Image (cartoon, rainbow, N blue to C red; front, side, top):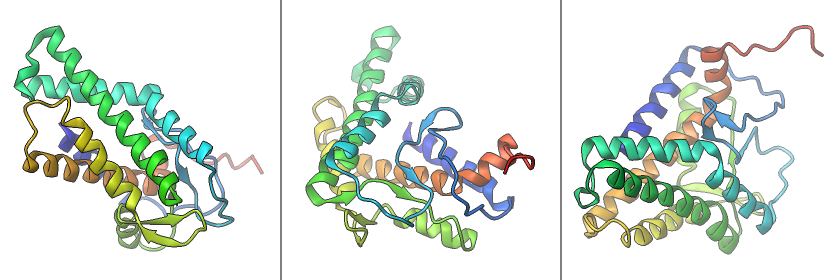
Length: 226
């Protein structure tokens, strides 16, 4: 199930390779990538950095968790899980799908609050993704992937991304309560690795979204507008 999301993210990122360099001028962020994937925590760049309050961090987590796009993604992941019969104890039919949807949605909500609100508040880290938007494609790709392990503090300084690693680790530990078929240490490590991969793919999409948006949807600036 999750590997589908990773593959999609990498495929969409590849569309950016043939596009023009990113426009570094300030621009309004799209709240949903492809009209579905929530995008409430992307900043065009780190210039004029302003720290978030704990309330603002929880607001971002809430927006990401209860956006319609998150519900759609949870439904899609549940459908894929139904087809592949992941977690066989859930069964099939409407009841099996309902359990898969519930657990998939719980994964999103718990993960969002842990990595975007609770741990960022405890460690005083910024949960936003600050787009680099300049340099070679490969340097930007490396930057996007590296942000899984390196982030900014509330003071704007670089620091190991405790919020991402510990937040997702906590979410995986909690998920053992509702995944009866996958409770071994190996299963937990696999789920953690998969979640980090999904978040990495999400960062790549956020980094290259302006190019993907122009290349796929042909959203070119209106030359008649100042």
